[in-house]
Length: 211
Image (cartoon, rainbow, N blue to C red):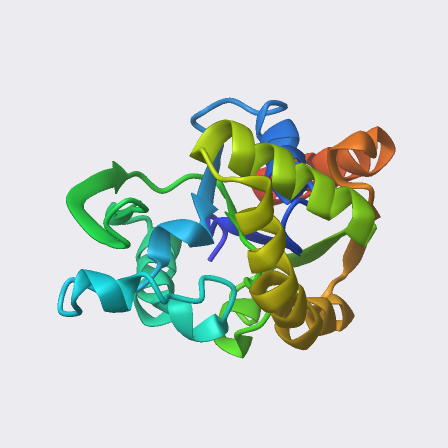
């Protein structure tokens, strides 16, 4: 149908700049035009598990995500229906009781490390993007974020990166690059790529408004 929203998937490793890319694109449009959905909102509900078990969650593995619910919500948004996006509580390591009412928009950007890993999600996307940034920059950004924003120690961040984040990136995230229509090197620093993405989205919207 003519008014079906455009779905754009933006993937990439931790610290690659995918969130910066997504926000930079969103800033070029009004709030009524574009919607950003973070895959991180759809981590599985773990309320049935003891807290000690929740601490063992591998957030970089595909099985950590409730893609069934995410896909259900995307279908709802594609049919111009409101959905209740979950909110994840990182302190309790499970889904909170809070939800966010999300209205459908003309453009939906789905952002997350593994949004290109699930074929069902890929099949809903009009444009698939992979933000490709060197590993040394990604680990530095991860270090700064986790220390400054999450109160982590340098040792704990490095240990998690070496034992979990890096192997999961190599096994699950990096291989999804082959599904991308567009690869953006250096993330949010690549203003030319962001401008090209914005121009492409505007072009699609204009074409649809004429049909």
